[in-house]
Length: 336
Image (cartoon, rainbow, N blue to C red; front, side):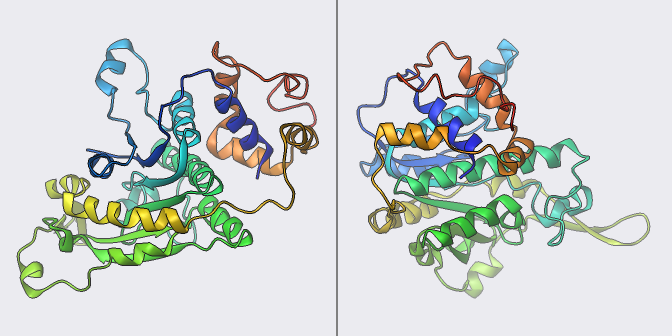
């Protein structure tokens, strides 16, 4: 675990905000219309949904960024705070896929060998940063005894992001394997076929595969792309108006996801510690942590230095006794 990530989590935990009366069970990030969170709430699970569109209109009037933009300083702190106010959480992530799917490969220049694409484009850099920050949230969910789910359209390259691969390898070292399942969204009353992938730290996601489509399902569905020839006669394709609508989960799919959450949570476990850690020993561990190249890479790819400055300057920050002396006074520290 990188030192800069540990510092970020500590600064978030020390923010003096009232905790919910009941810890969260289900968190839906990049939630759209929030159907997974809604169905979870309907069956009695404490849930919350996060999406950049929530509060966007009012933020625009104030001339500020949306409060739930994960690429903003406040947005990332909010997401971390929600996870820290959860117990054995099921965290569902539907990372914005537009930069990762084949329909935009011509502009993003992503492929299996260069999944980070052409970072000269701001949109590509934003998507890479978003994914790196999402990996932090996935890691927090797992180490707190929970489980993560990540959904993407088939052929998305998001799982080739070096930071997600880092997460998979780290979890394997902790004896926590990750799993992947492919299925048709058409089986969940979607208007289109939409072959879909889900990755998770729980094997229960295999239940999402309802088998092959029937001939009726294949014939009675919408297409998400339009094929055409450009001026030189080359075959091209682009997303149509149905593509945007397909981003919203059907209630049938949301209900299926929620149905596997209890089993996923009951089977999840936090990584075992080799020794018991008290508040005093944790302080000593943090004080002795070296600020290495891994922290530099985290800062470069996820802009964590800015988030730490934002959290450190909060008027609600209440640093426990003994910790102030060991916290770095600059980010990065002199030796970083």
